[in-house]
Length: 140
Image (tube, rainbow, N blue to C red; front, side, top):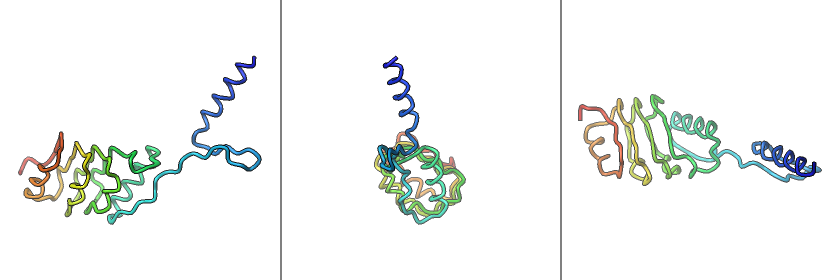
């Protein structure tokens, strides 16, 4: 019976990882808060980031490794470098004007820039990135 009580208590405590645990108004456990203390220039990029952070319960910028912002209306990627552990990024269908921030994402391995307004010269410059997969328009 003793082991059953301990097992139930352990199960109960483990199932409360998203809740604060208080005893006599003293916090015994506080779940980590979502990482929302970031700044990017583009409001649409911010919206995409917040959505992914909330959906995936991201508590540190290092935890975000995949980001899909397809058709998000994003013009600039300034500030994205805070998420330097990004490995996969989809920017398909965005009216991108500036891609300079991509060159600071050293862990990026997969990039989709198809259906964007990037010039062939800009897309060609992405060949300098150590990507395993680059998806772009066939016209270049």
